[in-house]
Length: 305
Length: 248
Image 1: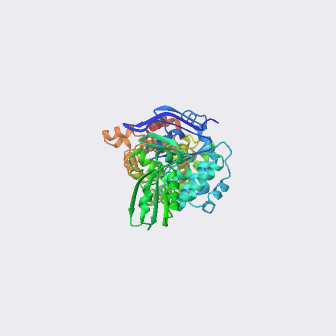
Image 2: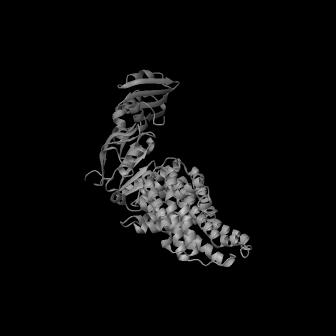
Image 3: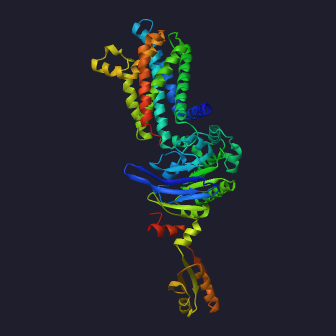
């Protein structure tokens, strides 16, 4: 199966600002692909070039075998779009929006009421858009993005501004989209979201892609460090821990020890050491690096800065 | 995409009517001005020729221009609010053509203008002091042609205003002075020469001349000059807006 999205060396500038600088990547059929990076990194610009809403200065894009610039209306028929910080008319009713969107596509739209039911919006059918909560608005935008039964769905900063509970509910919905055999292309600046949802991510900063891979592979490749935190009153503990191979640093405060090292084997080695020397511990946990650490390592700063 | 156009037009009409202030302002004010001023001046209409001419032609045309200006200002405001809220952009990310999205708003304004005019004439038949004998179909056409032409200025203004907050005031600052010199309050020929020159390049002047003529029962061909001017304004402003219109 050819890639659903193929982006080759696109560049987009606004005046003297380079928003997207020579970006290339591919998105495969049936995956959730995430473009992750801080605000202003070029995520939305890249996405909107692929959706046909913007034209790159140079480079080539192919989406579902179509050119987003020349075949924009054909493309719009087959994709679903949720835009960052979009609004609808304040006083449009939920069912009117779904009904309007359903009428805009030539292909058979899916049943609007069933969709609203699946998204938990059926009770809000007659509510004005302005009266919906943030989570309800985002669910309505998901409904509008799915109404034409698209093969490919774009979600731009879908959960920004939502509380954790609403965010989790939306994540389940996005996984549901993938289960229906659709491809999802999303952007986020939330590393947790990327880690939990995406099959593959591209890390973007200053308009350039730094790395692309599965989230766990990125962590494995860039952050092999492992940390074990444990508590013990055993006087010989420090001595014993120092003898563990691949341990790079040990700090201890009171009865709590923090052991740092690298490689997947570190945790096993620590457990082995504990059992072999019959060291009694009252607390034991491991700290694994995540995408947040990968980002810090690759860019030298935290994504929130 | 005719289906999308009708659906969008119908939804936008419903949304417009749900906003009480906007609906009352654009539909109610022209009708109210027409009836209240008509009754105030109407008593003297039997004795004073000036008052008769005012209630017979001047006031109906004034009220119609208020309908027209209300439509334009409302369009400017709605377009800039929709742009700022990302609504225009969201609609663009569908198979809808850009001209369909904007065309629906023109349709809404034309339909509401026609409805307001009909309401005005219907209320006038009962409460207006002077009999209304007007070629209603022809006059409605004249109002719609004028509105269409001036709405293109509205699109130009909507393209240029920086934020939604400034849309209404900037629109008003442009539209109301146009009204002052358009011949509504004093014949253009009686204005100072410099003002006349300004009036002659403003399309509203030609709209007023067309509306007055058709109300009085003139033939359309007698107003070829007005129609040409309105068409030119429409073409120029539409072409300019197509160049400078911002979707976001």
